[in-house]
Length: 99
Image (cartoon, rainbow, N blue to C red; front, top):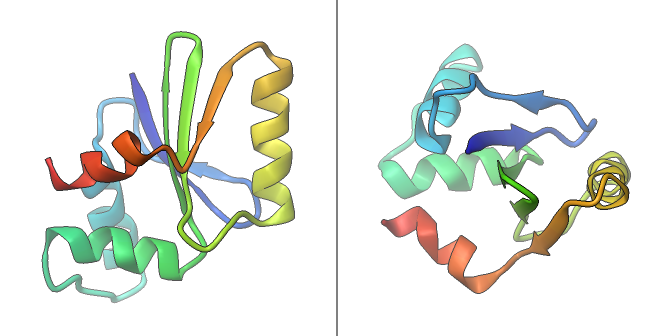
């Protein structure tokens, strides 16, 4: 399973073994942003235009509460063309942040 954040420009950030919270903490620290709590890590990343993504096997789960940029949409389309089953803003995936 590979967890990443996808920037508005379509760049994927995150190390292979990191979870989303670790990726967000590391990235936000480089911008001088301190999250108030665990869920605020996601809120801050979304506010910066990032989408949260997890790729596992033949599936891509991706979340962005405010929609996707053109570059993010292009990445999603490319993944679908590569035969990945794409789940966009799936409720179970969205809720997985709280676990």
